[in-house]
Length: 302
Image (cartoon, rainbow, N blue to C red; front, top):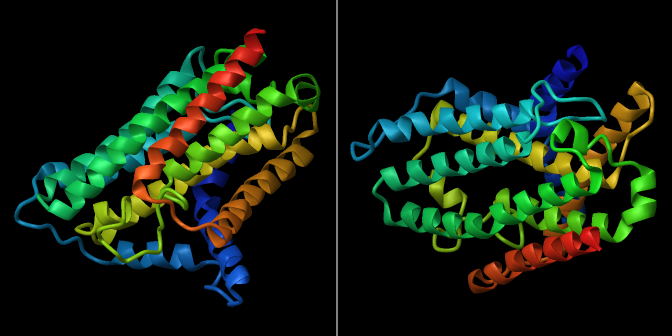
């Protein structure tokens, strides 16, 4: 349990650093120096010091949704093992609760956007819901495939059971699952090619347009929850890409953190070499993720 608490604290502290690493990677490709490494922390601190402004058209739903989304992200983090150790909370079938908490985070964001009465935010909420209808089944199926491959029903049993030997025995399955989770990671976090977090065109935004009316601490909660979600989904990929079992505790932690850094750098590289896809092509891309995980399940059953 103390190790699990340490990993939980590391995620809370280091999750905004993933954004910084991604931004610095993009700046490198653009030939710029980039923002300071601690810029995400400065932004969160600035927002927390401000007051929140609420539109007269919003209700208590808009005020509660940011805290609810942050609570859902933190609860999902307690179910996630890291560096080969068990999570704070672990039980058979916790992968379903894990997926449900991530869905609750998105549900809270959609409700808040709809509660504003803005047509632009409603448009973003409808796009978010459409992507979630394709991304969440792919995530659940991918977790189910890992459970079937490892013979474990808990995240704390599944992810630490992935080893180098598992790659040697079932590398096609793990490769397909890694690509599936990468597509889900980009879609769930609103990254290129699904969304562009740096755009300012309201008609093309998805995630950013949903939070146009949020300000102050509420916006800080939303941005911090998004950073936690980057960490959570990135940790799933890192567990497959860089298995730490059966390394000792210190090398396993360093390898896990290196895997997280690799995911952040890969995100920056992807956003530097790719453009955002057209909206009508996004369902096909996420549909590909479901097809890949279906093929992985067939290979496992073979």
